[in-house]
Image 1: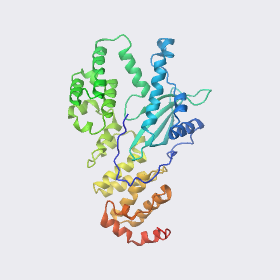
Image 2: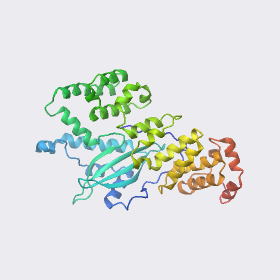
Image 3: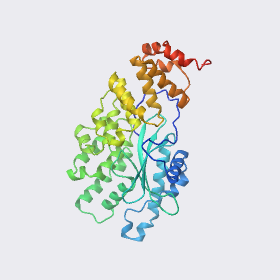
Image 4: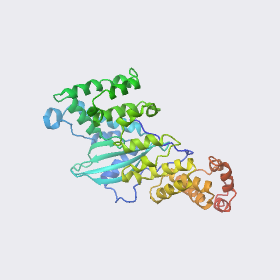
Length: 366
């Protein structure tokens, strides 16, 4: 897995709270709190012991239900996830009931560079306590177990002709990951598949995960037809993320296509505001800043946006409010150069303002 960067012009000196709940949620259960602590503490032993996903083909016989390779694979997934998040913090967002029973626990994973991802874990109620039945990254359509179920059914059950074509395409992903097949060759072979296989969720999820694992600017190298077929409108978070990687691009259309709960997420609202500020679209930046600051979650970039918006607009009280939150909530050292970082002239005017001088009086030794 690879995280997608929401590139922020931050000083990188703040810490992130390890447990925050968006205001609309009720108090989390003991099981959810235990899961959150385990994720933030990197408690691999606990997480591997409670991650017990059912085998995708368990209904076909007991040999599948107890397959050793399946249990080893699920343990590897959890180890990879903790390695991926080792320098980040898991912020609890929502706990939502599942129609089949249990709860879906949704998180915002904030990396040390303030890039953000959205994950979920499906908890199943059992007498012994915490049990995780599935997990997923919201960039994709298929969950971890859902992906494997679709793959197993394609490759293990008696195949039809389309399954055989899929299997041949699937064998190319390994050589691509090892650098033996070029991106152009892989995308050409993808576009040579039948339309039904091109639009198949398993095909697209596997290909997208392989492309993301390459890092860098893989998306910018894709021909428009490949991007349209591969991403389309079925991956709204991925679509928005790819847009946000282009610093000067207006991503309002992609933002509006997001699920409602993501449009209301403080990280995406702050990112949209920061991008608007970079384009000197002050009115839009102010609108997104107001949305982000309504949220009760302590989130460093939201206050950084508030401070910079106040500086560039000349509203020095707003700038002081943002700066005070950064200092008080995140223990940011007072550094005047940070205030001059993006807008030197406006920042100098802020440093000379009555609002800043009154605020700075409480720090006589700084």
